[in-house]
Length: 243
Image: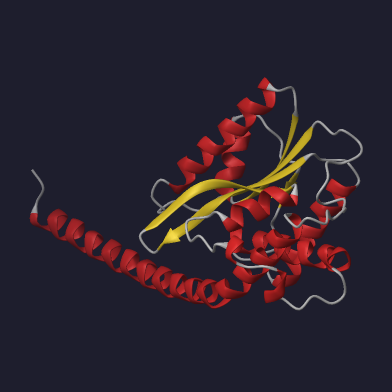
């Protein structure tokens, strides 16, 4: 039976743990509020980009662009960015991410495709090591959220890989935000860009692009000339938003 001294030690230890977890909770709440405000402030802009892109790819006049078409070289390689956490204390998030990895690995084997995984987070790296999978790349040059320049560089790298025919698809496994009380690990298809545009216009918050037409936008130069810049903007913002 524990004596009085041991009981006091256990009580003090529990109190210290409570203080530490309380501090971590406060820091997490502040960071969450910052990220949420940043996301909410840019939502109207992202929706407008998606609306315009939807109208362009569904217009009667067909737009020809490498990001809209399958690569000329029929690649059998899929690229996958997997974003996990460095630590625990995040509920079932990491386990849901691991299930996404398992699904992609299983589907790649089933259809005879090569899967290149680019990892972010120590938990993801540990799980890949457990599966004896060597990641194609590891993002270690930023702690949690990449800067705009870093996110753009990631997007540009995969755009180049896609247009050269080195990869057939790009997906990102991330924690998708539905509401402050609902987030879930999912895979966002970024390339081909048509799949990304479809996801942006049919997500939980439907933006009804079919209620608009080209008269709602002033396009200069022509849609064909501006599509490449628009597609890159959508890809860059989508990559940044997944972290």
